Image (tube, rainbow, N blue to C red; front, side):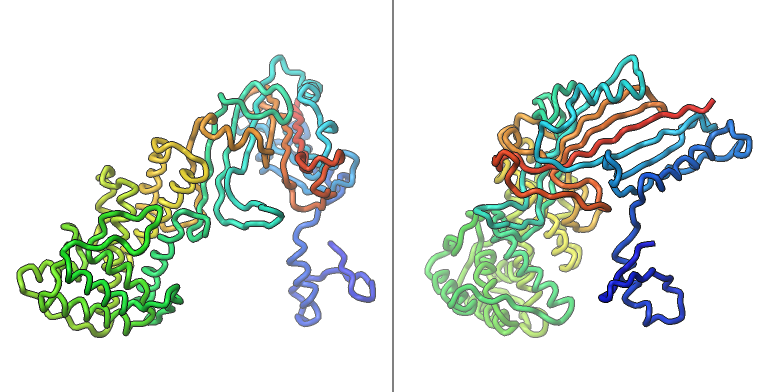
Length: 504
């Protein structure tokens, strides 16, 4: 039980929260929650011996006992080897326990690569314990390709990350660079809304769409601050005046990396009405448009597959027959939301070439579901495009590899929107060699193994940029190494050894 010292340095033993005097134990219980399980010394961790004895069928008192679950004990690194874990698990043939595997995990921090165990020494360590006739050696490594970074001593935090995992055989040395024959898997997690993303302007557009949808759902709308002085109403007036003078639409008033060149009248109107800051603005803009249509002042062009309410009014205006629309209540907001959904769906499809994925069209392009669900599905399309463009912009992946990421569309057809999900993509190391071959891995490992099935044993070394255990405190180093070379950062060494105990 951990001891907690108050200001007078008198140790107080923690007590159960079941005591009647709750106030007296308030501060203690809080600390107890924060401390969590405490590591033991290696001597106290020898309780694993009882685990082994209890599974030995040669001990008559425990004959025919069922196999226990594996047992792992946290250790405090106070021994010379720096042990952080000891573990034990049974080896069974059928339902009979025939032995126990005993594990030890030792850790240390260092900045000196020369102090590390060599690959040959690791093999010899395995041979001494297991005397195998043959051994297998496998390597693994993980590199950060995109995510939080430091530029000119300033940390740029990011919730997005792209890492790559390598696995290969025939390891020749510790910390070797993964060969081009390795298998490589990208792990991609992208959070929308980062300013360095080529999708940032589209994200702002989507956020405005979400604001409209949330306002319809909750009855309250938090309007975005306008980024320019000209109001949405004045922008709409000016646009209608120009439209009266010619049948073709103007070029977009802003351009982005993904902006289409074929925006129709309704889509360009949406671009201007994104500047609204009140329900009154929406109503005033749409009133200007419907009156211009009713009096035949404009004959705008729209896409044939447009499905918004305003598009239908425009089609009616071609025949001088326009239904009366009452621009009261939530009707203007519904109309504006429909305009945005129509426009942004085309934006995403234009890049994704979703028309080639016929089996997914009905789900992502459907206008039969309610507006709230349409917005959810649009967010899924946006997230997929963020993933694709992150890989394209920052990793320069070719389009044929990016197309494989459209499998995410199938995932999102049956799963909820989730920016925390990590999508995986197998890739040839040669495509990203320029990104990892000069970088330090965040995790590098080698594993020596022998035996097979339940009797397989392994000796493993993991080198990482942060501790792989969290219940002990490690010695830390400054950014500079012992030689003053900041190119070689400090790292943590974790070694896992296994012993196989056979019962007679």
